[in-house]
Length: 234
Image (cartoon, helix red, strand yellow):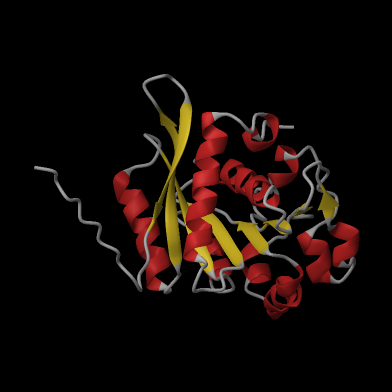
């Protein structure tokens, strides 16, 4: 199992950064019903699966009932993060060979549940855009406080665009010093072109001057801009 820092070391600086991200998402949810949130990136290996896994743990620690869905049917990896098998999952539900209760997997973190991808289909985009996918998400919507969906990089394939149409919000992960600015901008524009609700960007793998990784979060509201004025003391 890969290390989930919010589980293994909840007092670390990185875990604290995830708690800050969690707070940002909660504030963005004050006036909006942000329940289904998908996570994507520009390209592979920017750490989106690690991010979504730690976010799931962070929310579950607030006694929120959280479901992580592996919607990256091209390269499912949430199961590896949590040391689970991927023998059955989302694909089995959509195919009708298993029901959700047979596929949901528990984690050692209370309130955190995992739905792995299952078998890899020949055409993931077709599966994700199917009527069954939309009906499935709508059917489980009220059973969880938050549903986070891991998706393939939007800069490479269209899967994230499809999933974002079912989602209330999108989190965009950017790997520090790993992605070309032009590619990141293009990926963001793809999300904007389909009117995806980008609730924030996570800068991942950023190295501080103390040689430790740090995750930062930027939240932007399209409906409300708050300007803070600083008063200088004379």
